Every structure is written in C-alpha cells, then in structure tokens.
Image (cartoon, rainbow, N blue to C red; front, side, top):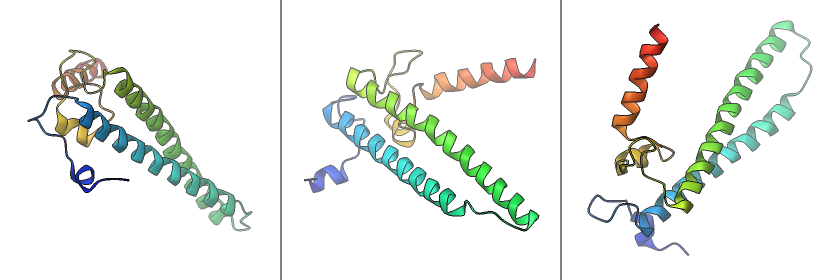
Length: 138
C-alpha cells in the first residue's frame, strides 16, 4: 500500500543527504524507469515479430529494414541504460549512491532527480567533458 505522503514526497536539501527516505525514493524511481524500458522492449519485440513479413515492393522492404535497424539500435541503447540503472540500484544497496565517483562529494538532489543514474557531480561531469573535448580535438 502506497501512502499519499509517499506519492507526494520529493527529496529536499533540508534533510540528511541520502537518508532512508531518499534512498527509497530513488530506488522506486529507478525501478519504475527500468520497468518502463522493459515494457517498451517487449512492445518492440512484438511489433518486430508482427512486421516480419516479406514486402514485395523493394522500397517498402528497404523502409522496413531501416525502421527495424533504427529500432534495434534504440533497444541496444536502452539495454545499456538498464545496466546503468542496475548499477545505480547496487549503489543504493551498498551506500555509495548519490556520491560523486571522482570527488566523493554528494551529487545534488536536483541532478539525481533529473538523472538518477548520475555518478558524477555537475562540476566533475563538466571537467570530464572538457577533457574529452581536448583529446577529441587533437
């Protein structure tokens, strides 16, 4: 049974960082996101199986193959996303969730709410992206 207060809860800077209630909030958010992705994947598989017909027209066949390719690439990205969600769930269990992998400092609640799989604080992520840009430009 979900209490009304639980549905309305939003993590706040006014409470201890990554307390039990915050961890549960993010755990539920991650699990719901994962279930949504898995449901989309099931729908895609069903659609691909239904679509698995031989198109006599070459243009229709090419269009169908392109659609299939795009869909499969999207599913592959989502598969990788699920592994990141699973990693975040493990971090919740081991107590490291919400802390920057680079600095050990807390990641802002706003960032975690927007991107619950985040492993770096905004500052560390920006440094990482700047370094990536420098190496890419070489």
